[in-house]
Image (spheres, rainbow, N blue to C red):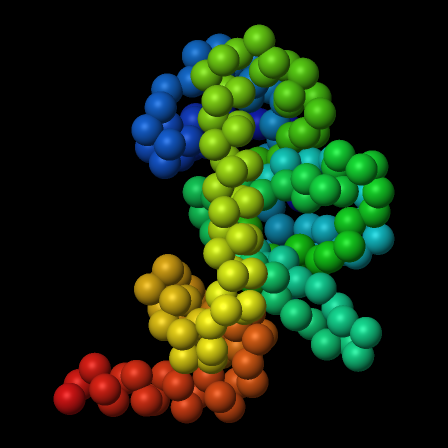
Length: 203
């Protein structure tokens, strides 16, 4: 379901922005008009590979996963995004090409969506928003870079320790097979690692 911004959603959005990024946004009313409010049930997709997407997504509530399908037909988790976070398929938007990955809702989601180019145009004369936009995109880049570094440089135990430190809340919210896919290991290996580290923490 997609709706125009409700009285509650833009204010909730603004509050989350200002709290998360320790800033205040001037001219919010004009910016808010570029957003629409959408609810997506669990297990449905916001974006599928092959879709053209021009939207920036701000998660008010819920949990999303970004994943690819490899040549063998396996789903490979690239990252997870939860309430308070921002996501946009920037490479697809800038290149004006179809998205190469899927974005699926894992928990019922309440989203604020805006045409990225329209939002940028409306906010181009708003220094506060532009500064915040750059910061949000940097956070997405850093998040992906950290994951890639762990896959390239860390062994299975190091990757799991990193995930447990960075995203402790996701260990409780995600099925084990989703975490294993994200870490590039099998669910059996992840189960062994969890048991090993749980045992060592109690001794």
